[in-house]
Amino acid sequence: AQSVTQPDIHITVSEGASLELRCNYSYGATPYLFWYVQSPGQGLQLLLKYFSGDTLVQGIKGFEAEFKRSQSSFNLRKPSVHWSDAAEYFCAVGGQVRAGGGTSYGKLTFGQGTILTVHP
Amino acid sequence: DGGITQSPKYLFRKEGQNVTLSCEQNLNHDAMYWYRQDPGQGLRLIYYSQIVNDFQKGDIAEGYSVSREKKESFPLTVTSAQKNPTAFYLCASSVTVNQPQHFGDGTRLSIL
Image 1 (spheres, chains in turn orange, red):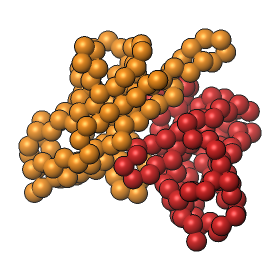
Image 2 (cartoon, chains in turn red, purple; image 1 turned 30 degrees about the horizontal axis):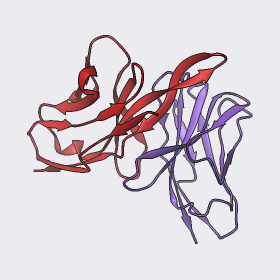
Image 3 (spheres, chains in turn blue, red; image 1 turned 60 degrees about the vertical axis):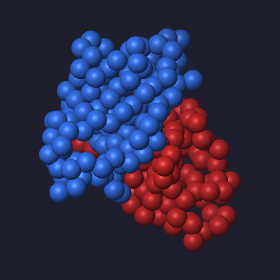
Image 4 (cartoon, one colour; image 1 turned 90 degrees about the vertical axis):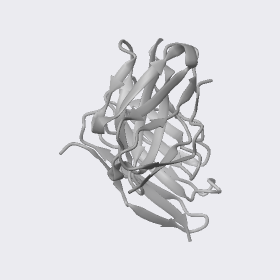
């Protein structure tokens, strides 16, 4: 079964500092990987995705993530954090769903989330 | 603007009562999903639908029911069999099952 682990429940950084949020996954084949961000009381917004190809993916709001198959990781990074980045971040892995005899990805498994606090 | 609309934003349920959460999308997406979010537990999949008139149970379907009679709509009913319904419920959709999911703003359900 697929699973996602976000080891850090809560991270605090100073504004302008660099950021790395960790994500480790367990999946039997090449995964589809996603990072989402959620502000309090809101839905989730997609930051970036990895399907295949270049293992370093760029997303919105200056975020990037690197897929490392050997480490089963997909860590999210940002070189300089802004106060508006304070939110909860979720890593997700795409699962395999049988559709009409074939297979396709679509069932997401989410990590437990990392809350980011930004100090001025 | 295209998007996903969930209503109501806040909902209160009495003991033994069924309630229905609305989810409408105008993105022309085939796939739709319902998640439950509890503090510290991430999102857990309740039901998903790959296409109209079809849906499958997710990881925590007990006490919930859905229908998918129209492409745009995927309502979720929280039945009286769901003993711990207090949570934040999120609806999502995607072009197909293998594409990124777009989320609504959620419905917070509480028990009176």
